[in-house]
Length: 402
Image: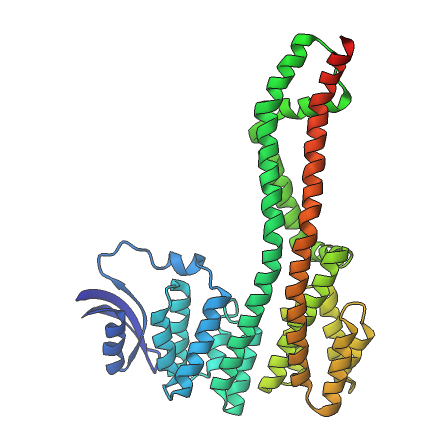
């Protein structure tokens, strides 16, 4: 048994702070619930752990939210009360920030608030997409179905991001390794060869002088060089976080041959999956387009969705904007959406598009990895070749003088 310092609330919103002996937090929560209170937070007395700092800095992953939606769907379909289900799931998570959030949501639901309203109080954790689909589930009386759909949506989104990021890990690791090896060679290998050239008192080629200059600079100013490098990287990163920088980056990505194809297919998959999930859950088409626009990151694809919303407001078809922007969204997207609108099966067609383009993204990432490998080998070979040439060329000059 341990003594816990706790904070709890009842249905009227009255707070209670105190200490109570219990086997664990689950037992404490059960005891307080019998008294009409919902546990908000608890900590073992005498613990030096600072619970406030953890929720502020801990990150809530997509996987955690995906598991929450899936498990909550199962518990609701089994007939368990919503607030009780959320409390139980809060005890299961090890993420302190997510635990505190779920306890607050449970307390809000216990006081009579809608589940979607309670989630809306935490916009940095639960996206507009998540809240909208929960709201649709409340309106249609199919909450467990909506949560199951949310879980599926989050899983597909997670898998899609993982595939794209996975394709970029290999080249990034190779470039970082090449950068580190290059610095080590400049610091430890070049000075040894330079001392030989100085003893022979010979005229050095321009390429060799450049390599020696870089080597000397790194030897005497390594900290300044590394600091300058990281400042440049941070400046570039910060520039791309601005609105103008994002637009420039979006435009650049659409101009690179292999990357451009991946960007288009990725955005087609995300748009189809998000819009299909929202419409399938019963969310109004205008709201669904607004939320989809928030989910999509690329500025140019956002504009297409915004254009589609404007056309729908004027009585037009959703598909028309996508058909007119076949340079961004593949023509198949607009055509399939048009068929879906004509047959009244738009969400079904969007799901089919999502499955197709998610498969295409998977294949595109494999193709990109296959293409990147020889390109990296060429780059590495060129760098190593230039370095070797800068060091060997003076030696040929020595041999020629004899």
